[in-house]
Image (cartoon, rainbow, N blue to C red; front, side, top):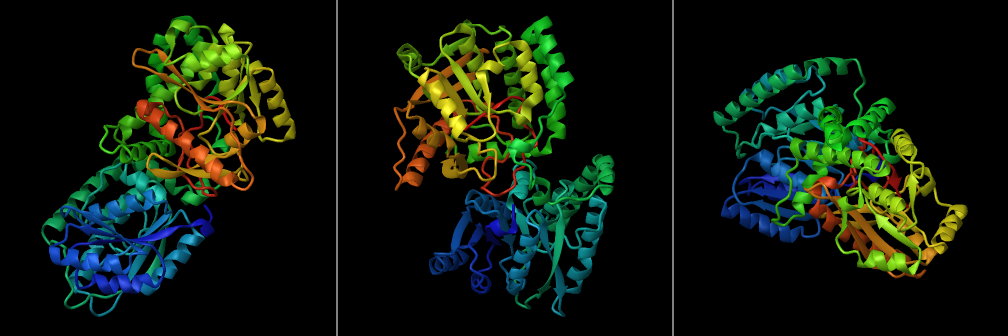
Length: 583
C-alpha cells in the first residue's frame, strides 16, 4: 500500500465522559476524518450527550453502542472492526477524556503515510499536571514490555493515542483472545511486535485535568495488567528461539513485506519431490491411505504460514459477520486448519481425477438439466467458476468421459511444480490447459475460435487480474466491499456467447456435487453505461459465490486478503497448489 492510498478514521472509546467528549470531538472534527465513537455501556446522561453530538456531526460521526460496559479494550476492538468493515485502512485511537493533544493528528497521519504498515505510537510529553504515581508507575509496565519483546522499540505501551494499520490489527484480534479492559493497550502492542510489525513514535503532549474522570481501578486493573504480563512473559519464553532469531533480521512493515506480493507473484509452497511422493502414494496405496499424510503436512503449513492463517481468520470473520445469526465456523486455528486441510484434499482429488481414481459414481449433478442441454446443443460457452471446491477435478472428469470439450484459461506461473505432477498423471492435462499471463488480441481470437468450435472455456471470477494495471470493480461480498476482476464480463461481451456458473463442492460422504447454472444468455455492455453494467454483473456473481461459500465454508481457497483494495498490498503467503483458472 502506498501512503497516498490510506483511508484513515478515528476510533474513540467512551464510558461516562459526558463533560469531556464534546470538546474532544470539536478538536478532532477540524481534521476532517470520519469518527467512530464507541459508547461502552455509558449511563443515560452520557447517552443523551452522545445522541446530540451524533446529530451535530452526522456527516462525520458514527455512534456505536455496546449494551453493557465491557471495558476500554472491548470498545476499541468494536470500533476497529467497524472501521475495517467500512473499508478504512487505518484507525487513529484516542481517548475521550481530552487529555491528548488533537493538534498532533496530522503528525500521526504523516508518519503513517511514510510507513503505512507501521504502528504509530504516541510518546507522552507530560506537564506538571501529571500525577507522580501515574508517571512513575508506568515504568513498571514499560520494563515488562521490554522484557516481553526483547526490545526497546515500544517506548510507551500505555498511551491511548496511537494509529493502527487495520488489516494487521484486525487479523490479530480476530485470532487471539486479548484483554478487554485497561490491559488491552499493552497486550495488543506486544502481540503485534511478536508478529513483526514495525513501530514508530510521535511525541505528543498529555495533560491531566484536575476535575478529570478516570476509570482506572487501582486494584482490579492492576491485577488484570499483572495477569496479562504473566501470560505475555510465558508467551515470550515459548517464542524465545524465534524472537532471538528475529533480532538478527530486519523488522519489516506490512507495506514493505507485501508491496510486491500480489497472489500471482507468490511461489507455491511445497517441494516437487514431496508432491511427487504424494502422487506415488496415491497410485500405490490409494486415496484413503495417502490422505492420512495430509494431516501432519497441513499442520506444518498451518504453524509456519502466518499470513495464510491471518487470511483464513479474516475470511471466517467476514463469513461470521455476514451470517445474520446463521451458524458459521468461528475464526481461529481450528477453522484455519480445516480450511487448509480441505485445500490439501482438493489437490489430492485433482490428482486422483486425472489418474482415473475418481469415477462418475463419485460425482453427482445437483441439477444436470442446464449442462445436458448445453452439451446437446453443441454450442460453446464461457463458464465462470471460483477457487471454491474443486473446479480442476470437474474439468478432468469432463475430458475423460468425452461429454464436453472443456478448456481452462489459466495463470500457471505460481504453481509450476503442482502442474507438472498433474501432467504426469494424464497426457491430456496440458492439452486442455491454456496458460496466459495477459489478454491481448491474439488470445481473444484464440478463445473466440474455441467457442465457435463448441468448447466450454472455464475461467474464475474471484481473483483480481495478475497485474497491477488490471481493471477491477467493487461488489459486496460477505458483508464487505471487495474488488472483483472486470475480465469475465468484458470477455463474455466480446465473445457474445452464453455464460454459466460452475461450482464443484465435496460433500461429507466424499462425493462431489456439481452446480451448473445459467448466468446470462449474453452479456452486453453498452458503452455509456459500461461501468454500471459490469458492476451489476460482478455483484450478481459475488452473491452466488457467497451462497456457495455458505454451503461449503471450508472449501474457499483464496489464502490472501480478498477484501484488499486495488493498489494495496496483499498478504498471500499460501499460493495455490494448483492452477489459477482466470480471466
